[in-house]
Image (cartoon, rainbow, N blue to C red; front, top):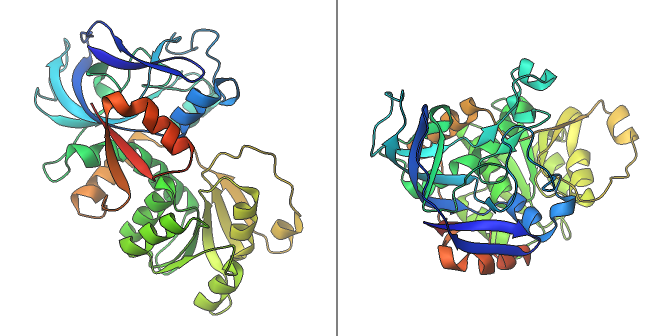
Length: 349
């Protein structure tokens, strides 16, 4: 079968490899669509600084390059391993791709998404979505209802990142929210907030194309932070109170500090983006208003279920921000996304 495998920095090849067979407790999936993630770009362009050590076997999976990429994917079950009797051949599925140790403090607390040795199928494992077929444990498979097609199914993973962050924020109906960054995760935050009944939302992004997409999706307040005062806009929309929650989905120091300043007293900033540089800001932003900053990483299986249910209810719209590319164009797609073109690309396997 064909598979896109990472061999090293800027070395992603379409290789011909052996088709996998499911072991006991596993399912075999014919992959359909795979989303290209920022993590994939980090691995491809700068593996030494992406937080993963590819020089030795992964502590949970034992995987080493060449590694099949693709951890945001959907497909159709084509074969069942021994002992799997609660899913059927022909079922369409999305895959929760997390591997975890089960022994560290995070795992013991039920926070397997922040396992100290976590890994991902399609990043640090035996397989991935950028291949014609893959095998995963039955526990990683989430069945898609009839109203959620395979394209939407490939978006479950990134949308679950956003859903988990919104869950972590503690936002309530009637409150106001700020989203810094209108990329795929920023839009996912908008969808998740809207699905929870949050309507007073400001999205901030300096990129004209991304702002236009947000406006087309129906975001009520979209601003260019280089031309408009985010803090003033939030104050005006909240009768001077400021936002209750804010999300950093941009990964820049200026976006984070602007979002933090837009919060009212006791407001909470959730950092979803990974910053490439250390931050330097005045801590009085926190102390004098009792604001707080927290991080949010990945998702739990319950977040997948919640996103799929929201998709089935019609809460997600891929129009205008999701595009497709062929498997043979995957390398060119990596470079195009790295240059800042496009919002979300799904590779047709």
